[in-house]
Image 1: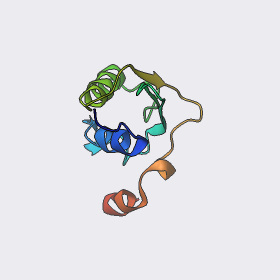
Image 2: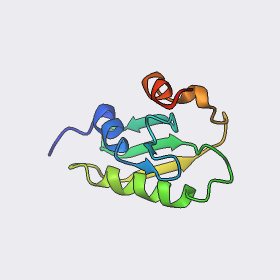
Image 3: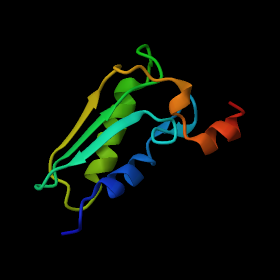
Amino acid sequence: MSDVTKEVIWNKLKEVIDFEIGLDVVSLGLVYDVQVDENNNVYVLMTMTTPMCPLAGMILQEAEAKIKEVEGVNDVKVELTFDPPWTPDRIDPEVRGQLGI
């Protein structure tokens, strides 16, 4: 069984793309928290760019599916929050530069 670490989960979440924007959820700053317990259960707290995001359900399902691809992961819970609300300030600084923000 491989080691399930926060770093592994964060890297896996970089494969989840917000297709409206064309960037991954980590670079966009949509992932607020990742926790891995001693039983390799994973909890992710994330948000969307707007509460009206039409792709929210699909993005959350994709995040869960990507995490489940990690060898050794047991249960996965991806929770959606809008507190605090997302702002463009959460975008990775390097990506902000590429976007001209």
